[in-house]
View (cartoon, helix red, strand yellow):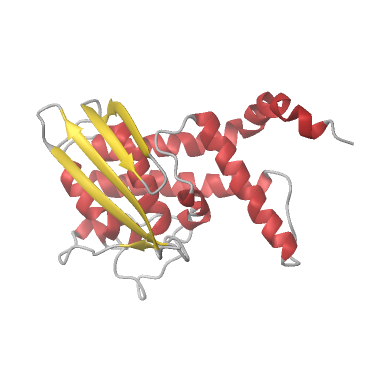
Length: 234
């Protein structure tokens, strides 16, 4: 098995220009393997608009790990408007994905990978979803993947002799924390961009986090009939 997992994002704009981002993750722990810019911007300092629930110490971390890894991407998109159109191709080992979308819609899944794999203790709770990354996912797909991830974690806890929680209460708490980070991090990003593509790409992620806390139960009720063959077994 390869020691790295790779996602390549390619953005092609109406004027023919392109942007390439080649993300590499350590396959043993899904940690982002990234070379940070030598001169990180002031907005990447951990103390700059620090998230209210951030557990990291400024004594041990000069920079916010997410901001440090995102700074190069934010710089490249700082002059783009959210609604500008772009063609996005995503390549991974198993397949290709493609979509004609807005800049904010195409940027959101890229931000999602980096935010969950950079070492933020809050965002890392969603890191397992990156292994089965699904760009441009619908709300139903996101809820299904999030719930599945959470229940697999409970299975592992049970196997390890730890308490397992089979209700979704803790999952909703996780997404509530993620939502707080998304909103606070948006304040950090506003200092870095002249236009709104970066911030609104993050807002897209926050909408999904909010819907996970508000709509997961209703979505699962709607999906329940699909499981009839499994549910009716004696």
